Image (cartoon, rainbow, N blue to C red; front, top):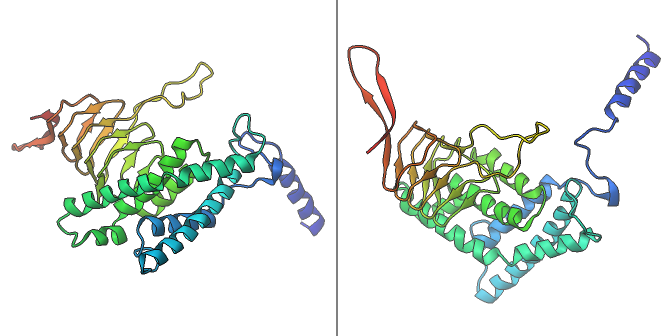
Length: 304
């Protein structure tokens, strides 16, 4: 096959690939997709703002620290506004004529939430330190624990999700998923003092609601059952379909909780159980094994 034939074949393939597809994004206004390096820098800067000295130089006295933090916040605002505007290529806000102005408003609105997010993260650090006897100091959890890394991303992503920012919340969540193995959808509502011990393999769905002072262990799934469909066969979007965990619930490793069920306050869910119905407050759900001459039998979901 000669070069001319090669060129014709390649041109034919190119002609097929440039045909419009259902996922094609909006190319007007010179928009592009958000930049992963820019979002990585954004999260690094946010970590430095939330935890000064752990992810940034330590500045003294207080006036110097405040000056450097203000400069960092301005950089965060600029990066955020640009990346929000880029995200409009997939999901343009209805009725918006000035995308740059809309992005600036959203970025500033997010900046104003940072003190509240910092307070939530302080609670997560407290939960990690007090919930793990291996933790020597709260600072160790900030610097080392995948739970704090994942929850920092989630607190940021959830606030952006709540503000209606397109695309970016999911990217920020998946950044944490890739590095920690913890998969939390940005739509999940998570209360104060939340801790994921070990963390690998944890899945928390979009419409989950998790109360205050809850703890999950590795391999826990808070997922959905079968998905309802519209008349045209497409999946129904946005319906409540994931579990609710009330305050002070502990879910041990490998447990699977599916559907819009409620795990009552103060309940303990044992390892490797499968739950698809409500659990009353104060329950202990375990996998009980009975030993006999034959194979072991298990009784899942026994309430004590």
